[in-house]
Length: 103
Image 1 (cartoon, rainbow, N blue to C red):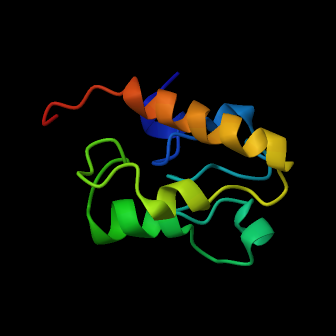
Image 2: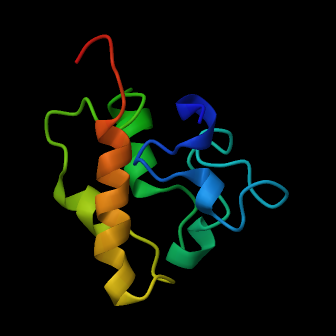
């Protein structure tokens, strides 16, 4: 997987999303406004805004506050409650696999 295009800054694997491809180019290509933002009633993802726009980080992994309260609360409302913890854990694992030259 190309982490620069197929993984959102939160660790979400865009390839696993049904909207990725024809309907959505992903978090990075849409500058934080992927197709699923309509599920949140938002224009830009709060995690993207914090990570990329405000803190100028490539993803959440190098942030000294990771994982923060924002990270743990922004999860798709379309996911059943039982799947939310698994989704958070999966995102954390993906970010843990990242290699940063400044880590």
